[in-house]
Image (cartoon, rainbow, N blue to C red; front, side, top):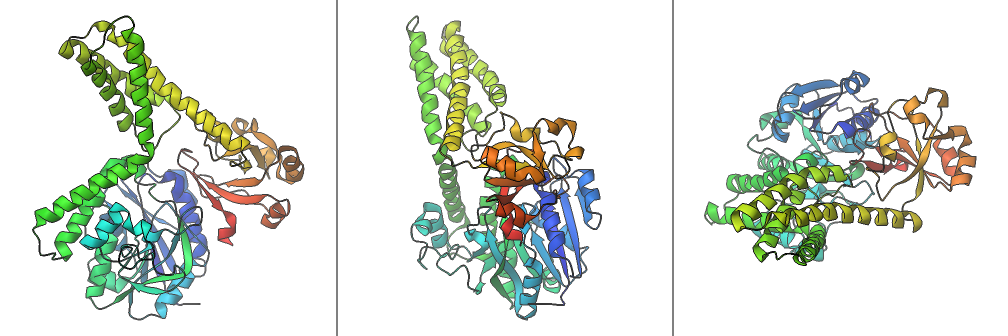
Length: 512
């Protein structure tokens, strides 16, 4: 496919410093030969995009917002400056393949009735993200999605209508809506609709504009002829609970604006509230076993203390509450981290409050501080012990493939070898570089040798993967992909240089 259509690409970033460079680099590469422009809105990020990152992409129109405007308003801010025929809105935590824009523009040129088009959206591991095409939510579809019927019966038109999982993911389809992670809209239509509805803060904007496009008489299409990778939810990780609230508020706004369910608004709101509770529960279920272990820790420390003095049930409950609460606030039951110091910062103040509450409200002896101290240390200890057991299991079972980094000439890489930031899925042995003389002093201790020595290094270490490190500018050291593959080593792109607790590994074959 070929097309003479021009396009503007709009990316709204919030706390996406680690991903934005790789995203912009892939977008820039995919736009070669196309009349295009790129806009990036740094949407009031507490961790803003670095100036050196901006300088690395001088062709990009960088827009800094002093506050978080939300997704729709941020997109509208950039879209007002867009001058091309098609506007693509894409998430900052995405990577596009080389033919993405060319193929999609050609498809849109062949569809004069197309208002919006979305492509196939893949997870980092190559699996399909079902949310890339959707039907407009109805009460029944939402219930099936919330209680899991759509997951149990993915091929059922009745139960799986929300994400339309019954359709062939490789078949072109007219759909109700496509995902805002990659959304192509004709600029004249977008302007006619006055852009995204800014009543939504985050989530729901894509559904809303797709519905308004259909009301204008145009159609929305799912085009599987190309794909992007989407590392879902990166922008929302730093505002997890607020994001959750935004999602269900968006559903309420959508229901109020576009649907008449012949029932009072408060009934709809009540249903959405209970759906939110189920959603919270479903997110916590995978980690609820940790709560049970914490209960056991509290009980064990109370039992040891009771050998010398009694401790009332109320006091035990107080200690348990001020153990669970800080761990929940720290996000440990949802997204645990190994950093024990961080957990201590949460547990110690709350533990102190728990002890004081037990003493002054329940009349417990001040010696209750001893089991409280034990609970704090045990809560951190068993987590670290479990992490190391899982880490070594992954290594010795071969599930974590032995890998070597390609990089080290610019960014510091010590964070990838920091024992407080190790990941069970990674077994990093060290790094190689095509320019070893330019490797920084900070990185030299991890250097295994020159890239040309990779055959002997692989033979010595049993390395199975070469992780090509994407630096803060989105670039990486040059290497011969075919030569690396001939060694029986799989080349992959490693994204996430600033905070490696938030990273992605992408098979480089995706880009070719």
